[in-house]
Image (cartoon, rainbow, N blue to C red):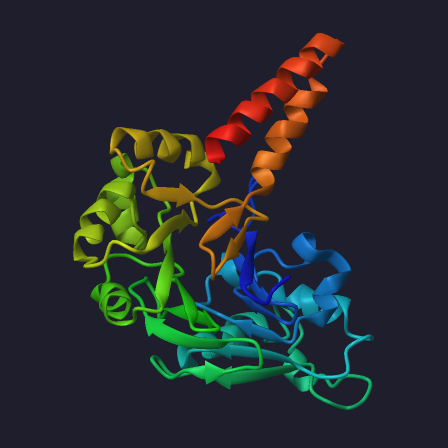
Amino acid sequence: MFKEKIKILGAYGGKGIDANNTSIQIDRCSVIDAGNIIKAIGDDAKYIDNIFLTHSHLDHIIDIPFLVESFYEVRNKPIKIYALKETIEHLNRYIFNWNIWPDFSDIDLINQKHSIEFIEIQVNKILQFRNFSIKPIKTNHTISSCGYVITKDENSIFFTGDTFICDEIWEEINQNLSIKQLIVDVSFPSRLEVAAQTSKHLTLKLFKEELTKLKRDDVKIYINHLKPTYIDEITEELKVLELENKITILNDSDVINLKKIKRTSRKKDLDIEQLIMKCNTKDDFNRVIKRLEKEKQKIK
């Protein structure tokens, strides 16, 4: 399914009942950030060989220690963690230090290969893989951070990761015409602008101002990393700011087609399931079917 697509394993900036930390699956073996790998793909997590980190905050790295431990016996090659120099230093100093978690870079697999391999990346230097290429772009967060431009068959999507106001993002999009889609961090409602500025995240109002730097009209825009507490408030604010037709909020399990600029949403499937479950009579069921048919006609 990953030839022209990516899958949102976790879309949010925290954990909630129906919300999980940030992680994006690029192909069967590769993800950006490790906020929600094991819960999202289960046993298929054993196939993850490449993890590209945006930065070292806990909500973006949390599954790495468990990923190594859970599939230790079935792996025959190291998990490669691609990250900026400072991010690798943070992981070694604060996570894989034998105090918080065993240092798996010192623990070999059964076949005597390393469990983890850290690979330092450079901003603006493209990494080429079999099914995609990926380019780190500098972003503006509280610690060293980057976003990524993912390209498949000359179709690109830019995932910013956590960021505040950042000219580099718009410079890349304006000059790289292969980028047709953008995923941006909007963590807080606009009334919490001070909190957003302090933690270096965007609000919708700040992002609306940032959008004036975009010199193109052919880029589909998504927002992610909403704090679960504020999902409803940010959703309403989209309408107030007249952005609901320009910006889409991502959900866990969404799939984005890089070629066709199309998103399939598990949330919509769940809404349909809930409507059907509420049916008490045959007439109720028929009304739901008619409603779905009308929506289908609108889409056509």
